[in-house]
Length: 261
Image (tube, rainbow, N blue to C red; front, side):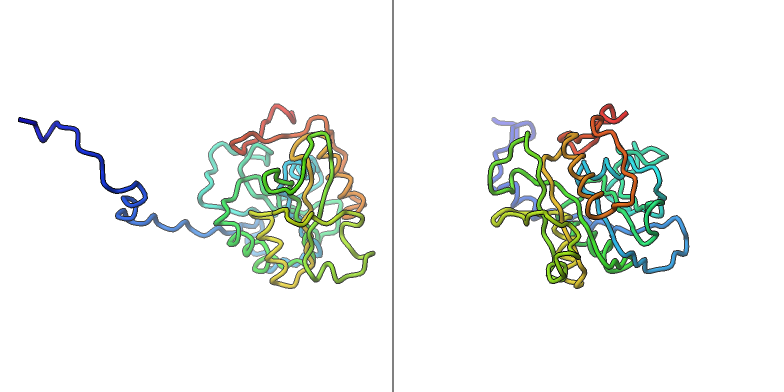
């Protein structure tokens, strides 16, 4: 006679997703929030230009900018602080807010050094644009994603495309933030935080530009981003950097510190 206590039970008649439907739902994640170094800043902040650096080349460019002041951070409860350094570092999983010291005080730079899940992109975009920070103009710097690009991408090529809100495109050609840059090809897709930020600008009728560059990593990409910023956006800012020691990201979205020391 079989021992019902030790006998291997028969396979479940339910699929795993059916079994999950009987489990209680996971508690919702706490909302992200902004923390400023000044306990009582003049809110909302109204910069003439807000730059959001998401791509590795743009993060490297602004990390090398020595004359900048840390004024705040975006806190995402799902991202732990363990492993972060005391001083801002490219190896940190953080989202810091700076003002370049050599530029106009009304310019704010946000360095997004952590991976933000797609389902959190809209809430983060709403927090960065339209609540405590209300910019006149926004520039978002991201990279072309090969899986979402319609066309062939060679690692030996360097190029950049742009997407603009309707209010940015209605302006005169001379007032365009990125002059001489082609528009993103039809059929290609941009998603994640960059798309959410541009969509937020469109909803708030803010002049917004999304610049995506290729390749995603490497000294050539850093030089391209640097030249775009100096030529069109921050001509008076010293962006002297060493593109040969450019930072790169690994598959787990962490930074390789040996490449920029």
